[in-house]
Length: 405
Image 1 (tube, helix red, strand yellow):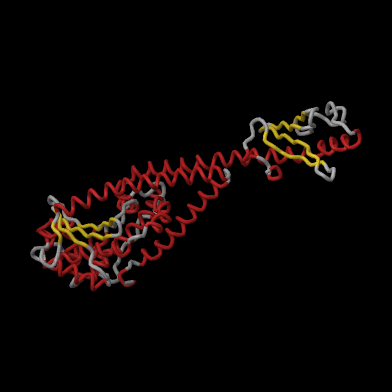
Image 2 (image 1 turned 180 degrees about the horizontal axis):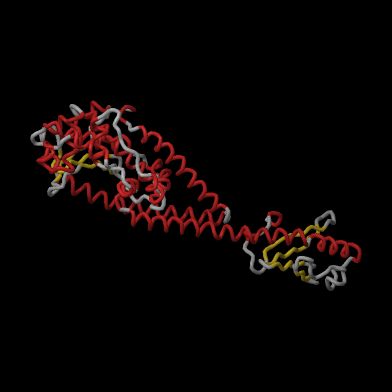
């Protein structure tokens, strides 16, 4: 059904997936820099969060589905057969192999429709306001059915949704993806409708209401779109999950619609507003702060470990000559020197690093500004002396230089 997929939906589907995978890869690298223990800790925490989130999802979603099945009207061949025949016709037109379960639910005057999923089962729900509004246009409800079937067909599976998730929190990208997906679903609704005019008037009911939709001027939509290019109009659409209804109508009416370009300065402001779905820009900013905070909590310790490791690597290299002198003294005198001075080793290196010697086992402690390294000699069966390296005061295992690991 590529003809029913909005072109920008195709491109943003690929872009968002690539960006999402890169973000997860970056997070994995940052966590990995803190060592295997940190990686295991983060993975364990994530697993617990996912498990608890799934439990919460099951309880919340099961309650919603139970309420739906117990109170709404299921659309079948025997219950609301006219609507069922339109569902079946739309599924055939869109190539949906199995009809999803459909319900009509009291919307208390609200006109809308939506699709949902629970444990692999698909549901399409029409609010009663939509059904009542289309009473004089029985086939008009097909647009809403087709739109929701578009969501069913384009819905991400859990793995894909997880990989894409961080990309959709980014400014501009997340909102653009959502708007493109809505335009795709509109095209699915158009494919189920008898004509572009029928689809457009069905869509117009969301704005004009249950009765006035029949009197809406479709040419008036074109004139309205032509003026929707100011700064604030552009900005608020850029951070919104839905295109302006007027633009949606024009895309249904015309194969090559003339959509004015948005104000370029609006992109600069929208760049600082992360996407938060229908929760709005304010929540988006909170998500942005939270996301940056999580990255900072990972990146700052990793950077600190890197800087300490760099200082200790230099200290280990600078003290190499001292360790060689101690070995030479031991091999010559057959005993451990009582002090560094006895072995003619300076207790302070040119860069300010301090050295101390344990006269009992000839362990050499290197004192740097970022912590201590303890080098302990060991004699192998061939009589050769090698040095082992362990962290001293102020040094964590993950901060050790590579030769000490």
